[in-house]
Image (cartoon, rainbow, N blue to C red; front, side):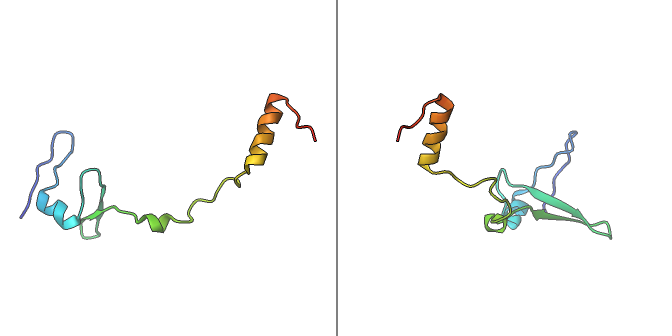
Length: 82
């Protein structure tokens, strides 16, 4: 059975067998869930990027290059003659 020691800073090294079983790599996050019976479940904390799709709404619509040019001209105090 894999084991690890807790450092004075409360850190542990996750044994390779456990990392492999969880499918985690350096930089990944893991979550600890404490069950009612006191047991602790360790799970990879992963989010599929497709699950996040549509979560945020755009703040404003895009602008055209003509609108951008007009804003620049207004900021510079230049009028387009027609």
